[in-house]
Image (cartoon, rainbow, N blue to C red):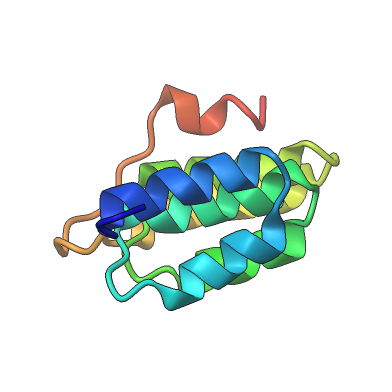
Length: 116
């Protein structure tokens, strides 16, 4: 990739994660100077694809710019192995959280769907 920017790096993270190259994804993620919500959410998805909910949760916890996609991804990650009580606890925390623009995060129908 001749010019590395956040968009190109996010595309690489998504592609590498989709194919299970977790070590390469980790290396790229840690080398990035600029990260946006897509970057963080792609990392959560990468770990989710291999069933590593613990690492996905760690990325989620360190994500300074959580958005609805972040919350939905984590709830879905916990619902897949049947950890519905953890997913519900996350859902119940959303109303108290603010995004990077200091606005409260509002849940929607999609947010609750993995739990139902």
